[in-house]
Image 1 (cartoon, rainbow, N blue to C red):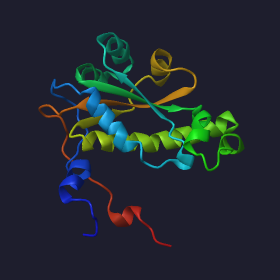
Image 2 (image 1 turned 60 degrees about the horizontal axis):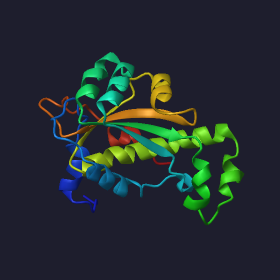
Image 3 (image 1 turned 90 degrees about the vertical axis):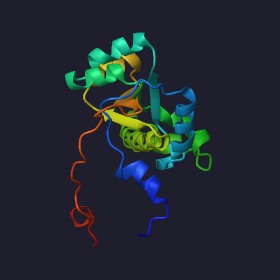
Image 4 (image 1 turned 135 degrees about the vertical axis):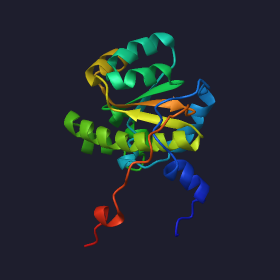
Length: 196
């Protein structure tokens, strides 16, 4: 095999990782979240725009506001997960571009002066960062349970503002008993990769 990453790390991040549906009650610390962010912030985005914003739902009061906004099948696991993260796209990310993309600070106005262009770019690049975030959670030895089954407008109103678009909600923690379904099939190489 031609990968340079240690096989055990490959297993941790991809082959043995599963979406978790149950968790132990072991807390996820602020130090763990900081370590996750300090790793995944280096994942690439176009123009280094870095539009992902994360709201950590830790308090019982915030959890009580979130759980009813989840699809019925996601409510119990969101109520019991040690940590819940709301991942959102910042549609005003361009305000940070002069600092984040200093070799072309004009990118803010040249490419992102229109709201529609910002929303499209923010959605795509924050989705990239959401994937990095999930892999970072796995790198911390934790399990992630990403979900898109929730009331998007309700979550935006309750936890965000008009400049932030929710992308997904991720339950985070150590996997509990029966946390995952068996591995589902994957498409074969030749079903995905085409050479022209």
